[in-house]
Image (cartoon, rainbow, N blue to C red):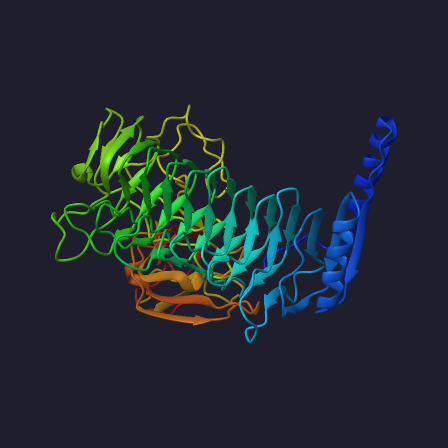
Length: 545
């Protein structure tokens, strides 16, 4: 998996120097001086890493251990963190990996004691855990920044938390667990904040993505996707909450699967045991229960005892497939759901919900889920809002944050759901590419090529050629041929489409032409190019100049 973008070493050292000055100044005023200690380990030097952790535990103050890129393969668990330690990569290329040797018996990679503090920055932690032990056990305070936690296997999933856990701009993926959770298991008294992060492809007998059993969980600007429980009768494919408190804001919960049965469903989210859940400006879509009966529904949300409160939120397109399903319609929700208004619930028939006058039902008008590739930034998986969607300008601005899940401003009256409608994406196009002038003979019966470029982060290969139109207004001619090639020589494939000139609607005197279409993810695109009409005084049939 491609490494996440990290702070360069020289920037970190500058940051450290400035903050050391601040710390020293404050300490002198208070008469207390605690040093910040920095150390560095060369690539793959596990002996150094263990020694630096032991040394940091023995000396008060904050300790920074900088790891050169490489793979640090462990034969035994790292020392228990009892002090204040930050372990960070010096660079993001190649990646810096801390892993259990696949040939060694299972063990935890990190254990943080009740008084310990651990920050992991720019690292990958993998192959940890065994039996009843997760890869990371946190009883103190642990912070993940720009970090990947992957391929770990143990009871409680990748991370078991009873202390304070912060997950920033990180990815927790492809981990598996026992009866508790696959990604994160937050126990009673634990506090978890997940922000600008992705929890994906985790599995467990218990909750797939996050299990919150009596703790406090906040998910903000994040994506909980493709997680699942692996058998019948276990709750919460994405999130399972038993007696705890959960707040979800500006987030997408999608394509998660719960085993279902015996009252344990909730493909996206399950709540029980008197738990309290608040969901604001979020999207819960395409989750499912793989086995459902009269005691278990809720492909999107299932509330089996407690409070689930929703506002400015989409719950639509969730399903409960299977022969034992007592209803044939989509099962977006089950149990009692409290609406505070400005929601869209695709099919509310499976739950007891107090729909408000500002609530909507039916198709939300969303594109396909995007942002799920390994090169996409954490927390950026979302459903784009399509032109004409009923969600547009139907949110409650008093309940919306200033920005959406992607960090885009919510301008004016906000939209319902995790992201704002962006309108058509402006793309770069060129008529007659590689020619000095975009000349068109409106009387010609020939074809003309138009290129759509992969620039400014836009991938032209995602354009659905069947939706493209080109002409005087961008609504006229469909392409007669399509090809992919690097037109501008920048190393990225561009899309080149051919159009029959008589079908474009271009007439003598026109100075521009437009192209419109839709990407495979459902995003509308628009681009325009200046043109010059030629041979307008001659008869139809002359060649393009």
